[in-house]
Image (tube, rainbow, N blue to C red):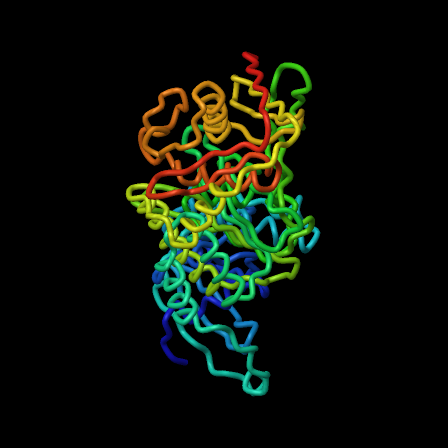
Length: 455
């Protein structure tokens, strides 16, 4: 036997093989039971799932010391953990992450009605041992090589540092996931602090981009990751934590049924692995980085660590780009100049309708966008119609009280990016071009008729 660091044991805590736990009653009577989930908290603590008030639970409350035997499924090496029970948590990041993972294990084994997490038992790791390796373990084939996490982070950081706009930073992150980690399905969402909802601003690997689709804070693995400010990772098919379609806002008025403002969510219909990481900056959640796969156990704790590090850099980049908007690249300036030099051909009349209740905007009876991005589009259309304007600045938008931007972390760049991408996908007759530092041009192809509805 030899002493070992707890980080070496993390592959044993993926839920592939149940752990064996030994406890003793107050009178010294031993008891051995299987534990469905052991969760890595930090270098000195693990959390065990509290699901039933059974003999193991009674023993822990009477005598807090226990022993845990875990097995590495890759090399068949056993480890023995000597634990001391500290407390039970029924809310917070650890509890929510364990609840999500347990839901996946339960669904995968057909025991969703049995495996219900009542609490997370926090244990201090008093001692940890690596047991002598069996001959079988030595004969096992080596696992498939994985990308070096530091190399992935270095390349990802280089891509992010070269980004000069929010859109470029988002694409740099998605490029790193796809090219360095082989992640085929991913999306990035930004948090609207005013509405407590997350909206999709970029995605990769789906039939439709889903830009503008929303999820409420606390809903699904994405919403939980944002609310609890913690990564949430599941490795099996799950119904309890499968990402549901965006919640629908009710609208009143002609042709404004709730379904008409539901932008289809671009997620996989049957994900078998999911990982959501909050984008944090200055102790504030800016959004969520989300990846998924149709394959079980696709994302390991190493992938989680890499995404947390990348997410931290992206979260700070979002903040910095809000504080100091980057100047245009040469390509952007050339594109804007070419657009200005090319007159727009006259097109059919665009009938644009806005509902004041939530600033939802419809073009020719088709839903386009809502919220702050909808209010921005309505302002641009009104100023163009009343004043003949086409040139605008980010600063004037921030100072416009009618847009109801929050005082802190308004995420204006993200809202403009969302608007730009929705127009490009759904209404190319309207377009936005960046023309300089904090400046852009808004253009319309053909006449526009505006209708403002108070409901």
